[in-house]
Length: 218
Length: 218
DNA sequence: GAGCATACCTACTCATGCGTAAGGTTACGC
DNA sequence: GCGTAACCTTACGCATGAGTAGGTATGCTC
Image 1 (cartoon, rainbow over the protein chains, first blue to last red):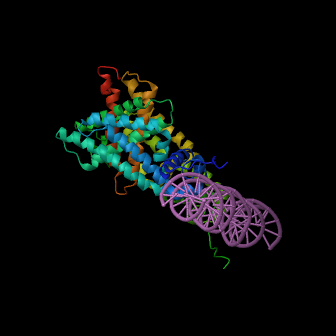
Image 2 (image 1 turned 30 degrees about the horizontal axis):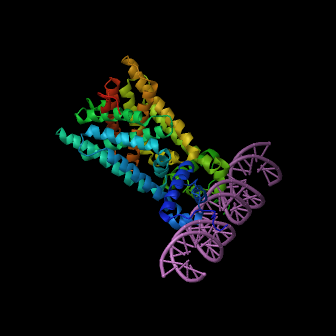
Image 3 (image 1 turned 60 degrees about the horizontal axis):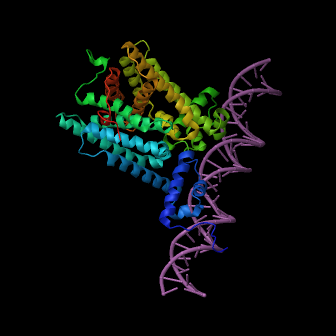
């Protein structure tokens, strides 16, 4: 009897990963508040105090999930989009990596973005990651601009980058909700919608509101 | 003393609106879970059982907020973008109305979108509104296509519309977080980023991934 | 000015779920 | 073989906040 332990004893590092895996799954299907620490512990095949001992409080646990998934995602993107490529190539590779990642980690994505957005304690945490993404995209645009000897105010760049990131996230949601959808195809569509628009902007083509075409607004 | 009631007695319809106003404010700054019914009642200058008597449970209350704010927003947009205008004009007016609304109801927006997104019970509710928006945008694009005698698969349209809506929401967040930002200017920027991209698509210009330009991928 | 409906309140019950105290069990060094 | 440290458990305390029971004041109608 003494040789058949009911539960395996595992080193800390392994258990931590199991817990994080379980937490991501549970947070993903229940939401942050809907998830209970008991359920996460059960999903991980472990008891609750262990979770507290290793990963801390519920909030800290969620942040840990956020960090792990976020880091993985950023690495996937950064690894694909080498900085010495031309801007459109970089954007394309970045998008492909991004949608590939979301397609492969649909529940991770749900945790990462949909949940964290609304909840105050994590909005800041997420904003940092998001800001890094925006910065990367804005950097690409800026690089392309310099190549064409053009100047654009920094705010303008930021706004375009923001719109691009938002459109991409939106399509990521679209993808995450459709198990049959193809990440590669989605990336192509996004590239079409985004780059052609941004490309026009880069060439100085600008659309103006009708009211400016003659008189001042009342 | 009997002629100085500590609290005014008001007709139901008025109190309901006060409660909804209060609820929107509190949900907006605390989030759905962070908000307590006690705080909402206090903010409305009323006691908790009244809220239950008039608007029902917390979940029902939130849905009521969602509906009111959502309806107002859709009306603002629909009222501005008359269906007999050309597509770019409609899009522009719709965007201007939208950003104007968000700028004027920053907390309503926070309730409406940022919160509802993550929480399971409301995601469906929100998806309906969002779907209506996407439908409207897709309708615009389709209309413009027919005018140019072009055909595009329905899925393609939906995806482009989805990206457009996503980019717009993203800029709305950007706007909501920056009290000094000008809604009108934001709308112009969005129009630039969105329409020039979509406009190219409409003319049949298409970007293709590099690997398709010669050989099949391995 | 009696009666009745509606607006409104104070003060409670009760479930949920986070976080912990105190105690078993296994491996490993010596 | 025996201590010690790490792993892991069961069983609980406790705060929070949703929702309610039951009672009071006010205005309206005849």
